[in-house]
Image (tube, rainbow, N blue to C red; front, side, top):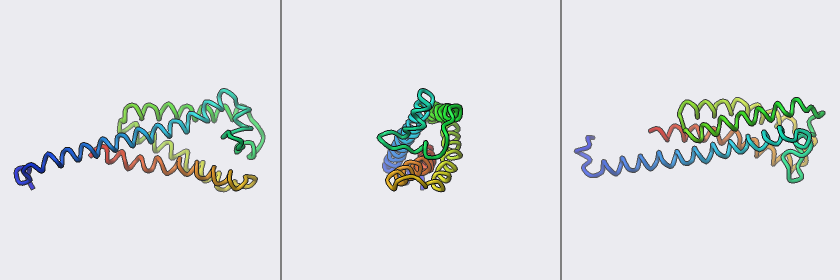
Length: 158
């Protein structure tokens, strides 16, 4: 069907498509910001106070890291630097919404978060039920959210 055949409806289709892209952009920015915060929180904590991160993460009375082994300051600081690096990458994607940068950041994040979730699913021993559920849900979100954002990236361009 040509624009002439559509008559006045063409501008409605264009406006609707524009609104759809704008909604997708907004969802992308919000989701990328959530991922940024989920990386910045442990990253900054592990770099500034590695012993506290090891004994007290994620906070609020929960202690998920110390159950997995002996404290190693070098390893904890490396993890903090890794998370902070991802936070910076996600900030850049949030600001620019560049297709290449955003898809690269999301795929790289999935390359970390999927094995991270699998490891923790296999190592729930020692966690109370509320901790096991909280950890699994939290890490599950870090896998599901980027998958969802990849769909929104696609919608934001059409």
